[in-house]
Length: 196
Image (cartoon, rainbow, N blue to C red; front, side, top):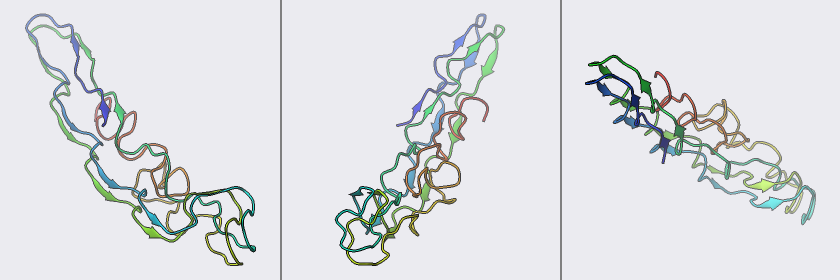
């Protein structure tokens, strides 16, 4: 569901018989139907919904469900609903019998239908959706899910929708918040406003 305001209603103030193929029927395969196996559906066997910044129901001193921004529910502006205002309502004041073929019937296969298997569906035994920085529901003195970035969903350069060089705005390879490599607002590699 990409909201592409594609070049349709063009206001061509041109003298008489002008054949203006304005940016209407454009076949733009925009970053919508992309098969991106992003770091969401990950099978994480780890201390899940823990909340609190204090050693609550813990029997011992051990860092369990700690503050790990794990790879699960994050806010991602993934390559789907992108709002691209492509060269639509253009005002072309051309002389009369002119044949202007503006950037219309173009077949642009932008980085959309791509099959990117990013560090997602991984079976990581690491702390998942835990909130809080404290040794919570743990038993015993054993360094299990500790505070930090687990070995799986790490922050780095991974081929997924990220903000910068990391798979997410947080410390997780999941849907991150920011401009992903595909459907972005502005001059994206796909249906963008301007010359591609």
